[in-house]
Image (cartoon, rainbow, N blue to C red):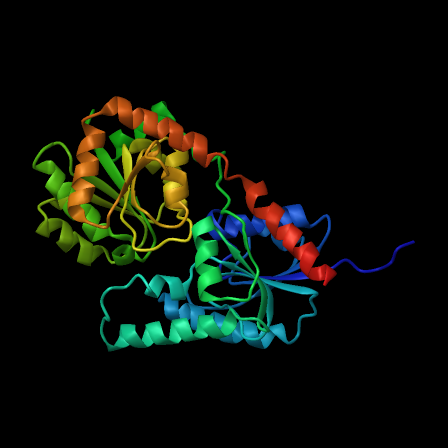
Length: 378
């Protein structure tokens, strides 16, 4: 009889209580890995149906602002780690989440690569944040401190190999919830009626929590305002997520959009917003994958987005959307071309959905579990 204990994985992530994004990827990983591994999860939250199947260590970090939340989590996780016995440590991290050695890091956001895209030095606070974030990442992601990195897209893999040489990097794309994000004409009409969209009115959507400047909401607004000069019906924008609403309401007024921009807050039914919209505008400065782009594509929407990691692989040859420079005039031209050619927009939406559906749970959990086995074997 084999009485050897199963390997224990210490899985660290900021928030395991949500049902989408990084949390959903972690949930799928746990579900599929439980036949082979035991898990200890360190997070601020965890969904109830998994908390009884793992050892859950709750970290009482504040809800925001993000940098304070991260700092508290980083310190407290480092203190708790000393009391956890694990065979392998895996962090799903937008930034290093715990001090000391880590076996595997799924890099949800590369601080070093992001700050290389910045063209302006910013004020003292931003410069200090840049220095600290890049220094911390460079110290954490180096041989001797981490054994392997996981990127969400091929472009991210190239960045990590460039910025953190000497470490093996694999690709494990984000998990897309295909059962949740799909077109539905009946629900589309209901959503549009609920949100006051006129029949036939082109509606754009923008989806992001918190980082509206970096994701280009101001550029999207200006681009829609420019497009209205050619197509007056254009200009309605649904903004989903928690961000600086007052600031961007002023931006909307500045560009003459006013009430045409609806701030919908953070929605649990985000799939319905995609169904009601006509296209996504996403002129982000940097991405590692962009769930918003993939979710909207799965929902049958053409994508107007900058060429960033993950996005370029989905949109690729222009068949699923339009890749643009990070410029308001480019947004306007893309919007006009989609609105004035409904047949082309429909073809883009159909092709985007076909491509997005390839990002299932196996694409993430398979490579990660293989990485667990390889790392444990050594």
